[in-house]
Image (cartoon, rainbow, N blue to C red; front, top):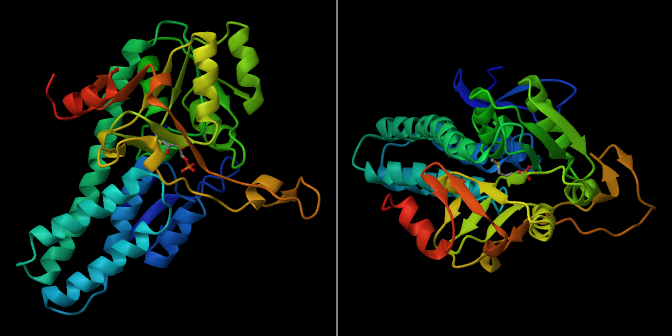
Amino acid sequence: MNIRTIDWKNDKVRIIDQRSLPQKLVYLDIDKPSDLRRAIRSMQVRGAPALGAAAALGVYLGVKGYMGVGWQGFSRRLKSAAKYIASSRPTARNLFWGVERVVLAAEKNKNKPIAVIKKIILDEAKKIMREDALSCRKIGSYGSSLIKEGSRVLTVCNAGILATIDYGTALGVIYSACSHGKKVKVFSCETRPLLQGSRLSCWELSRRGVDVAMIADNTASSLMAGGKVDMVIAGADRIAANGDTANKIGTLNLAILSRYHKIPFYIAAPESTFDLSIKSGEQIKIEMRDPREVTGILFKKTTAPEGARAINPAFDVTPHRLISAIITDKGIIRGPYLRNIKKILSGRR
Ligand code: MRU
């Protein structure tokens, strides 16, 4: 199955509309920054690395039609396009990283003609996509060394093809192990409220022929207690310098359960998810989403009494001491994280 979550095609951003899954595989072609921002906010495109690429392409959409010739005017337009896209969702580091990459590429070339700078921005966004495809395969290959024949892996949300360009981080580890001939069984937490685990992870895992069983989120503990889970692998939206990791709400529950049941708990993420400018997870801004995502099912059916109040944080932060290792595109990082994250990301072993 070769599917691509996000691409640049016919002068437009092409995304898979993830809100239509698993019923229909629908592609959307987007050529306005406002439509792209809406697609990010409404989670038609989602998952940290996919957001990095979407944001970079979104900045390009914002400057593509600029008709002026001078850097000053272009720079103002670039900054406002960057700010606009960066305001779409607050938690995933990759989104800001994607924006910063294209802005920096433009600034480094500010003496060139505007048409050339625009092309540089688009090329940088395409490069981000190529790099992500490669990074995920590296994460997969490092991570598959942790998976034994017959391993039973529990995961949450969707950190797969649909959260990246075309392979996945946590699910990339599973795809890589399977490609080496290992048999892996996956338990996918459904991931209330937006059901990325059932709608998206089960969809892509089963399309790739991986043995997957969906579970209600509250089933994880009893499966672990019954000795049916060998490890947990989750993705990440932002990792602080000390290893504290923000990921989909419910990830922290799994980390605490894993510690209690003595099961390894792994995070899989590319370098672009690390935010070494923040010391700890306390500094990570957690997105609060519409409470109706909780009081209903995918906005279609209300499941709570009229007027019921709800709170809907989209992410939680798992403290580094609950994380057995972080599987990255640069290698597997174990504690002490403050020292080893810097060491491994900088290539010093
Ligand atoms: O709200 P979402 O669906 O964008 O949340 C996504 C996650 O939490 C993923 O686990 C994370 O972005 C890692 S994706 C490789």
